[in-house]
Image (cartoon, rainbow, N blue to C red; front, side, top):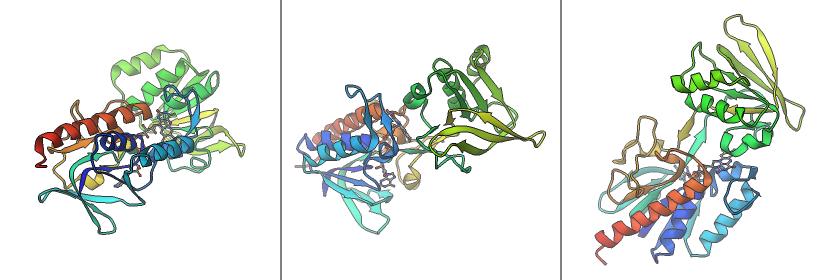
Length: 307
Ligand code: FAD
């Protein structure tokens, strides 16, 4: 039985594991894929104190740091349920059950993709999902933002400061963003908003994005846009489907509700990173969240453990 079992091996989970192990707690990490979204990231330039790195390199360093503390890392394992008969039990898809006195849930999130030709091919080569991360790569160039919800319009306003021009493509005939954001976007002269636009293909020259095509859903006409970058902002989905039948409260967006100690609604269960209600989703924030969650779990254990 683990003192702390961390579910998820991204930056939040890795940080939680190190913090728990450094308290002398018997710590395990179970993860479908160690590294999480970082493993899919090319350039990282906002991991403070490291001027520039690459996802796979940071993942290798995370793994090395976690293993330094003798943490039991169980990879290629997917959690499918969380129950609490006496101790906490995490059931894996292969049927195995892991037991723990406390848990840190850090299963992250995934960006919803457009599922159009070219998107996968140019992911990381012009197709981007995070304006905070990749905005500066498109300095002085034209870009498109797909999605006119809050995240799309926020991204457009953010990018307008850096890039040459932003075209927002919204599928519906209205924007779903807050009025104040729409007003701000409309006041900037390098943002164009196109409604009723269904993106149909990402175009590229074999190595980088050069543009996209979309269908005007009113006229049925196919149009082409020349851009260097495409920011897909059609939703970040938390990986929390496996918690639906548990006693851990999720928001209507599926995010794990946490307080400022990382505690969930179920005593002894803590959570961190992109799977939670933390407002900004970044590596450094996920790591901070993981540390908070483990310190929260430690606090719980010293009050609730018999030994
Ligand atoms: P994740 O990184 O999503 O990790 C989740 C972990 O949980 C993984 O190990 C996964 O396999 C595991 N998991 C999921 N479900 C289960 C399950 N049921 N059972 C077991 N394990 C499970 N942020 C920056 O700060 N700078 C950047 O430059 C940057 N660039 C990015 C580029 C891209 C392409 C993407 C997609 C994201 C980028 N981000 C960047 C965001 C950053 O990667 C995330 O905020 C961060 O990884 C979140 O960490 P996390 O540990 O909460 O979740």
